[in-house]
Length: 385
Image 1 (tube, one colour):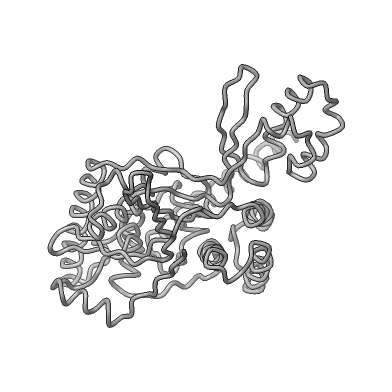
Image 2 (cartoon, helix red, strand yellow; image 1 turned 30 degrees about the vertical axis):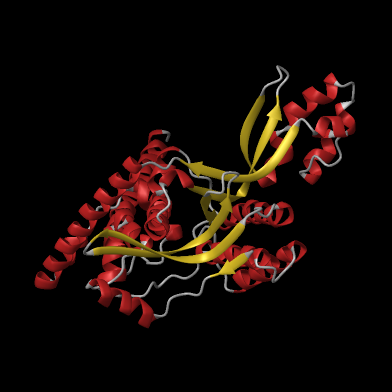
């Protein structure tokens, strides 16, 4: 059974704020914006300035993929229709001239080819979860008496185990590059927050709640090794054929097949369908779910950071209201911020003043380097006369 929750109206959200005597409901987006870039927070939530760049494709594409997947889950469309829906969204994005990379057209095209082929492969091959699902479920999370968060869970799966006990599986869809290491730790707070909200709402213990990402651009491939053990790999969907060539050749030779009769098709069609059955069974390809550990300690640490961050934001907001000094939210931009600010941010250098200051300094340095290089070339030329 599939149930789609309705979005809360502005009046309903205001009623929640009134009930708990709070000025507003925090969202993960608002909190994470401040953690990522305090000046963008200033522009968006303090000055309420609209973004002046709308040509980044990632937000729009991610939203379209979410919508298509939900239509498939609720039975509005068939799996075979998902590709057509995605192609229609790509046409809209191309007409709007949205970009994966704003600075380099060749790189933009390369990213588009990879990204879009991966998503198309997902829609063709995705396996619908076998459980009851609540899509876009509203979630209210109490942090303290004065701090409440709200959000919408992409997919809240519900099943009952053999002992008759209820379990909830929270799934967040991602069209981004897979999170690993520090990136996974940084981005996963939203799922932990949702888990706490579900616990508060249902009273279920944490060991009956699980949280996971569905990375749509990837598959998990379990590969049988020559020693009889299975090895798991996470592979981008457009690279399945290329990445498995070595293992496929090994098994083809081991079973007496000529690899030359199969390998070209594996690469050309990015598929194992043409392989003999006894070779295909050495490879198990599944959707890429990444489940996260969920403990009381992790949730408490997140709550502590939220409280600290909200207090810091409130302090800066109060200071700005008195001084009107934008330096209160200023941040120093470095080279590691450049891709985000140039390709992903909705604010241009015209509005993002710290970014503009960084670019001015960079451009001055580049001009000086060019002048030094020109002087050197002149001296070399004169020396050769």
